[in-house]
Image 1 (cartoon, rainbow, N blue to C red):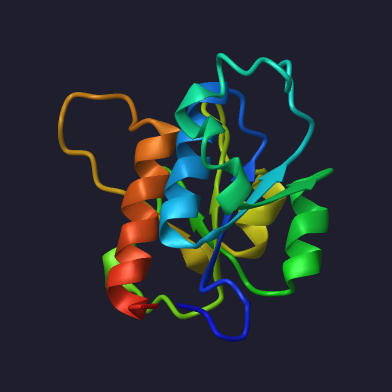
Image 2 (image 1 turned 30 degrees about the horizontal axis):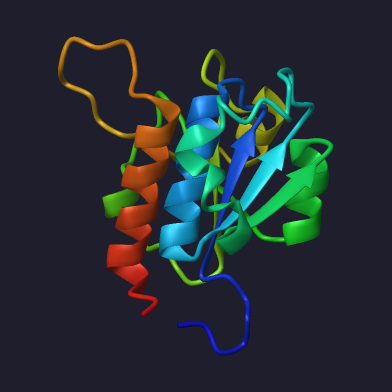
Length: 156
């Protein structure tokens, strides 16, 4: 799919907290050939394989990168990120996503770091949720965002 070995999309998780979500997102990224960047300290046991079950079989085929924090990750990627966050004024299908773009999702219990949001106010996107739920699951948000990017970019 990718002849020059650059990922067609970078999915960045800012301080994720739930192992099952991360594992599901690893599986998503392996299946879609998206580079996954996990930022911040992991606050759970990394070697607890039973909790990684949803993605365990896919780590070998996934491009997973660990970063000390979101700032270092974004500096390394050197691109203006799209931020998927509650309260954005546009949806991912109302903007033009391009090959090599960076999508950032915040932790399950909080938002993407305020400093990053403030630096990219015009690039905050939201997933509409008209139903009676507080929010979508992190893995669901990742899947919706990745597949919308795939629809637009058509990497393969």
